[in-house]
Image (cartoon, rainbow, N blue to C red; front, side, top):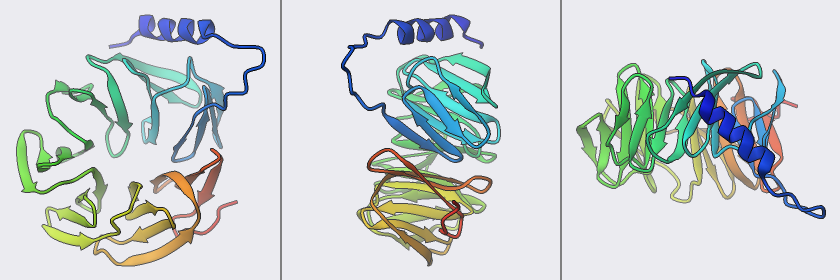
Length: 248
Protein backbone atom coordinates (compact mmCIF):
# COMPACT_ATOMS: atom_id res chain seq x y z
CA UNK A 1 0.00 0.00 0.00
CA UNK A 2 1.42 3.35 -1.04
CA UNK A 3 1.59 5.88 1.72
CA UNK A 4 1.66 9.42 0.33
CA UNK A 5 0.29 10.66 3.65
CA UNK A 6 3.19 9.06 5.50
CA UNK A 7 5.69 10.62 3.08
CA UNK A 8 4.08 14.03 3.45
CA UNK A 9 4.25 13.79 7.23
CA UNK A 10 7.93 12.88 7.07
CA UNK A 11 8.60 15.89 4.84
CA UNK A 12 6.70 18.12 7.25
CA UNK A 13 8.62 16.80 10.24
CA UNK A 14 11.91 17.33 8.46
CA UNK A 15 10.96 20.88 7.52
CA UNK A 16 9.76 21.74 11.02
CA UNK A 17 12.67 20.23 12.94
CA UNK A 18 14.23 22.90 15.18
CA UNK A 19 17.62 24.24 14.07
CA UNK A 20 19.71 26.51 16.24
CA UNK A 21 21.94 29.04 14.49
CA UNK A 22 25.06 27.78 16.22
CA UNK A 23 24.24 24.06 16.09
CA UNK A 24 27.20 21.74 15.44
CA UNK A 25 25.36 18.42 15.81
CA UNK A 26 26.91 15.80 13.50
CA UNK A 27 24.31 13.83 11.48
CA UNK A 28 24.08 10.13 12.27
CA UNK A 29 25.74 8.09 9.51
CA UNK A 30 24.34 4.76 8.27
CA UNK A 31 26.20 2.39 5.93
CA UNK A 32 24.69 0.18 3.23
CA UNK A 33 26.21 -1.90 0.39
CA UNK A 34 27.06 0.81 -2.11
CA UNK A 35 27.19 3.96 0.00
CA UNK A 36 26.37 5.89 3.13
CA UNK A 37 23.54 8.04 4.50
CA UNK A 38 24.69 11.17 6.33
CA UNK A 39 21.72 12.66 8.16
CA UNK A 40 19.08 12.78 5.41
CA UNK A 41 21.51 12.69 2.45
CA UNK A 42 22.24 9.50 0.52
CA UNK A 43 25.72 9.36 -1.02
CA UNK A 44 26.48 6.49 -3.40
CA UNK A 45 28.20 5.83 -6.71
CA UNK A 46 24.85 5.74 -8.49
CA UNK A 47 23.13 8.80 -7.01
CA UNK A 48 23.23 11.54 -4.41
CA UNK A 49 19.85 12.68 -3.14
CA UNK A 50 18.00 13.85 0.00
CA UNK A 51 15.52 11.79 1.99
CA UNK A 52 12.47 13.34 3.70
CA UNK A 53 14.19 13.03 7.10
CA UNK A 54 17.12 11.15 8.69
CA UNK A 55 16.14 7.47 8.60
CA UNK A 56 16.13 4.90 11.37
CA UNK A 57 17.88 2.27 9.21
CA UNK A 58 18.84 1.56 5.59
CA UNK A 59 19.85 -1.44 3.50
CA UNK A 60 20.27 -2.12 -0.21
CA UNK A 61 19.26 -5.12 -2.29
CA UNK A 62 18.23 -6.08 -5.80
CA UNK A 63 14.99 -4.08 -5.53
CA UNK A 64 16.66 -0.82 -4.53
CA UNK A 65 17.52 1.14 -1.40
CA UNK A 66 15.31 0.24 1.56
CA UNK A 67 14.79 3.22 3.89
CA UNK A 68 13.16 2.78 7.28
CA UNK A 69 11.43 5.30 9.53
CA UNK A 70 9.66 4.44 12.81
CA UNK A 71 6.30 3.84 11.09
CA UNK A 72 7.06 4.12 7.36
CA UNK A 73 9.14 1.95 5.01
CA UNK A 74 10.23 3.39 1.66
CA UNK A 75 12.06 2.01 -1.39
CA UNK A 76 14.20 4.18 -3.69
CA UNK A 77 15.83 3.43 -7.04
CA UNK A 78 18.31 5.87 -8.59
CA UNK A 79 17.10 8.58 -6.21
CA UNK A 80 13.41 8.14 -7.05
CA UNK A 81 10.79 6.96 -4.56
CA UNK A 82 9.27 3.71 -5.85
CA UNK A 83 7.10 2.45 -3.01
CA UNK A 84 6.05 3.46 0.50
CA UNK A 85 4.42 1.26 3.15
CA UNK A 86 2.71 2.15 6.41
CA UNK A 87 3.94 -0.12 9.20
CA UNK A 88 1.57 -1.60 11.82
CA UNK A 89 4.02 -1.03 14.71
CA UNK A 90 7.23 0.81 15.48
CA UNK A 91 10.15 -0.44 13.40
CA UNK A 92 13.63 -1.46 14.53
CA UNK A 93 15.58 -2.49 11.41
CA UNK A 94 15.25 -3.45 7.75
CA UNK A 95 16.97 -6.38 6.00
CA UNK A 96 17.01 -6.11 2.19
CA UNK A 97 18.70 -9.34 1.13
CA UNK A 98 17.77 -11.77 -0.34
CA UNK A 99 14.19 -10.45 0.04
CA UNK A 100 13.13 -7.43 2.13
CA UNK A 101 11.75 -7.84 5.64
CA UNK A 102 11.25 -5.29 8.45
CA UNK A 103 11.87 -6.02 12.12
CA UNK A 104 9.19 -4.41 14.29
CA UNK A 105 9.08 -4.01 18.05
CA UNK A 106 6.40 -6.71 18.21
CA UNK A 107 7.08 -8.91 15.19
CA UNK A 108 8.07 -8.98 11.52
CA UNK A 109 6.55 -7.34 8.44
CA UNK A 110 6.75 -7.98 4.71
CA UNK A 111 4.42 -6.74 1.95
CA UNK A 112 3.49 -10.31 0.99
CA UNK A 113 2.77 -11.68 4.49
CA UNK A 114 1.93 -8.52 6.42
CA UNK A 115 2.56 -8.48 10.18
CA UNK A 116 3.61 -11.71 11.89
CA UNK A 117 3.93 -11.95 15.69
CA UNK A 118 7.42 -13.45 15.76
CA UNK A 119 9.60 -12.20 18.68
CA UNK A 120 12.73 -11.91 16.54
CA UNK A 121 16.08 -10.43 17.43
CA UNK A 122 16.96 -10.62 13.73
CA UNK A 123 15.49 -12.06 10.54
CA UNK A 124 16.27 -12.88 6.92
CA UNK A 125 13.80 -13.69 4.14
CA UNK A 126 14.80 -16.16 1.41
CA UNK A 127 13.08 -18.30 -1.20
CA UNK A 128 12.76 -20.98 1.49
CA UNK A 129 10.85 -18.74 3.89
CA UNK A 130 11.42 -16.20 6.65
CA UNK A 131 14.10 -17.26 9.12
CA UNK A 132 14.50 -15.52 12.45
CA UNK A 133 16.46 -15.91 15.67
CA UNK A 134 16.10 -15.14 19.36
CA UNK A 135 17.34 -16.47 22.70
CA UNK A 136 15.38 -19.70 22.13
CA UNK A 137 16.81 -20.71 18.76
CA UNK A 138 16.61 -20.53 14.98
CA UNK A 139 13.10 -20.45 13.51
CA UNK A 140 11.44 -20.61 10.10
CA UNK A 141 8.03 -19.05 10.40
CA UNK A 142 6.33 -20.59 13.43
CA UNK A 143 8.60 -23.67 13.47
CA UNK A 144 11.74 -23.86 15.60
CA UNK A 145 14.54 -25.53 13.65
CA UNK A 146 17.28 -25.59 16.30
CA UNK A 147 17.63 -24.47 19.90
CA UNK A 148 20.24 -21.94 20.97
CA UNK A 149 20.86 -18.32 21.88
CA UNK A 150 21.31 -16.36 18.62
CA UNK A 151 21.52 -12.66 17.83
CA UNK A 152 21.94 -12.41 14.04
CA UNK A 153 20.96 -14.46 11.01
CA UNK A 154 22.18 -14.10 7.41
CA UNK A 155 21.68 -15.99 4.15
CA UNK A 156 24.83 -17.99 3.43
CA UNK A 157 25.31 -20.42 0.58
CA UNK A 158 22.13 -22.47 0.10
CA UNK A 159 21.03 -21.98 3.69
CA UNK A 160 21.21 -19.54 6.57
CA UNK A 161 23.75 -18.92 9.32
CA UNK A 162 22.52 -18.11 12.84
CA UNK A 163 25.16 -16.29 14.88
CA UNK A 164 25.58 -16.37 18.64
CA UNK A 165 28.52 -15.47 20.85
CA UNK A 166 31.44 -17.68 19.87
CA UNK A 167 29.12 -20.07 18.04
CA UNK A 168 27.25 -20.12 14.76
CA UNK A 169 24.86 -22.67 13.27
CA UNK A 170 24.70 -23.33 9.55
CA UNK A 171 21.29 -24.65 8.50
CA UNK A 172 20.20 -27.01 6.90
CA UNK A 173 23.66 -28.61 7.17
CA UNK A 174 23.29 -28.44 10.99
CA UNK A 175 27.00 -27.63 11.19
CA UNK A 176 28.38 -25.55 14.06
CA UNK A 177 31.12 -23.00 13.40
CA UNK A 178 33.50 -21.39 15.89
CA UNK A 179 33.57 -17.60 15.62
CA UNK A 180 34.94 -14.74 17.76
CA UNK A 181 32.76 -13.89 20.74
CA UNK A 182 33.38 -10.14 20.45
CA UNK A 183 31.83 -9.56 17.01
CA UNK A 184 29.76 -6.40 16.68
CA UNK A 185 28.27 -6.65 13.17
CA UNK A 186 27.88 -9.29 10.47
CA UNK A 187 26.79 -9.59 6.84
CA UNK A 188 27.05 -12.13 4.05
CA UNK A 189 28.05 -11.88 0.39
CA UNK A 190 28.87 -15.43 -0.65
CA UNK A 191 31.11 -15.58 2.44
CA UNK A 192 30.54 -14.29 5.98
CA UNK A 193 31.98 -10.89 6.92
CA UNK A 194 32.31 -10.36 10.64
CA UNK A 195 33.27 -7.12 12.38
CA UNK A 196 35.25 -7.25 15.64
CA UNK A 197 37.12 -4.52 17.57
CA UNK A 198 40.29 -5.56 15.70
CA UNK A 199 38.82 -5.31 12.18
CA UNK A 200 36.90 -7.27 9.54
CA UNK A 201 37.16 -11.05 9.19
CA UNK A 202 36.10 -13.08 6.15
CA UNK A 203 34.96 -16.69 6.63
CA UNK A 204 33.78 -19.26 4.13
CA UNK A 205 30.63 -21.37 4.81
CA UNK A 206 32.87 -24.05 6.37
CA UNK A 207 34.10 -21.62 9.01
CA UNK A 208 37.63 -21.17 7.64
CA UNK A 209 39.05 -17.65 7.82
CA UNK A 210 39.91 -16.38 4.33
CA UNK A 211 41.02 -12.84 5.06
CA UNK A 212 41.30 -9.99 7.54
CA UNK A 213 41.34 -6.19 7.28
CA UNK A 214 42.51 -4.34 10.38
CA UNK A 215 40.86 -1.18 11.63
CA UNK A 216 38.51 0.40 14.14
CA UNK A 217 35.03 0.43 12.60
CA UNK A 218 31.52 0.69 14.00
CA UNK A 219 29.48 -0.98 11.26
CA UNK A 220 29.71 -2.98 8.04
CA UNK A 221 27.53 -3.97 5.10
CA UNK A 222 28.35 -6.33 2.24
CA UNK A 223 26.83 -7.63 -0.98
CA UNK A 224 28.10 -9.54 -4.02
CA UNK A 225 27.48 -6.57 -6.32
CA UNK A 226 28.78 -3.74 -4.11
CA UNK A 227 31.59 -5.34 -2.10
CA UNK A 228 32.26 -4.59 1.57
CA UNK A 229 31.45 -1.20 3.07
CA UNK A 230 32.68 -0.09 6.48
CA UNK A 231 31.84 2.90 8.64
CA UNK A 232 34.66 4.45 10.66
CA UNK A 233 34.12 5.69 14.20
CA UNK A 234 34.05 9.19 12.70
CA UNK A 235 31.23 8.29 10.30
CA UNK A 236 33.30 8.02 7.10
CA UNK A 237 32.76 5.16 4.62
CA UNK A 238 35.52 2.73 3.61
CA UNK A 239 35.01 0.56 0.51
CA UNK A 240 36.68 -2.85 0.15
CA UNK A 241 36.44 -5.62 -2.42
CA UNK A 242 35.02 -8.98 -1.38
CA UNK A 243 38.67 -10.10 -0.95
CA UNK A 244 39.08 -7.32 1.67
CA UNK A 245 41.32 -5.20 -0.51
CA UNK A 246 40.85 -1.43 -0.71
CA UNK A 247 38.57 -0.51 -3.60
CA UNK A 248 39.58 3.17 -3.75
